[in-house]
Every structure is written in structure tokens, then in C-alpha cells.
Length: 80
Image 1 (cartoon, one colour):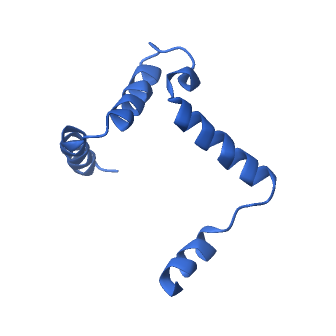
Image 2 (cartoon, rainbow, N blue to C red):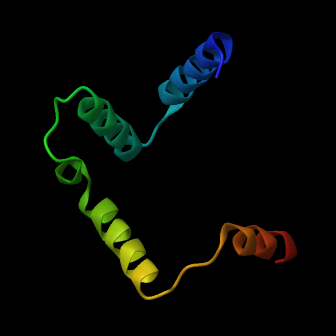
């Protein structure tokens, strides 16, 4: 990514973050920030209970073969 592209992306992200209304998403982004700065403990502890449940459900689905390829997913959307 060029410097110009990087700066454009940063500005777009800042604008997007400023427009967020979902405090859960803002909290998650803050956890990522703190983690990248080495100021956070385990990121898992920063997640909401709902986030943890959803992540664990996704892992369980994967382990049980309940996944599909990206191609199948997009084809399903296009044809569904």
C-alpha cells in the first residue's frame, strides 16, 4: 500500500469510527488498540459475553464441518 493509499485509508477509518453508534463495536476496536499497544491483558477478557458465545459457536461449527467455502457463500447470495 502506498503512503497516499495508507493516508486515505486512515482518514476513511477515522470518519467511520466517528460515525459509530454501537458501543460494543467501539469497545472491541478499543480492545484491539490497547492490545496493539501492549496495554491490554488477554483480548478475550475484553469481549462481551455475547461476542464470546458467538466466537465459540463459530469454532464449534468449524470443528463439526459446518462451514462452506467463500465461493459457495457468494454464489448462494447471488442465486438466492
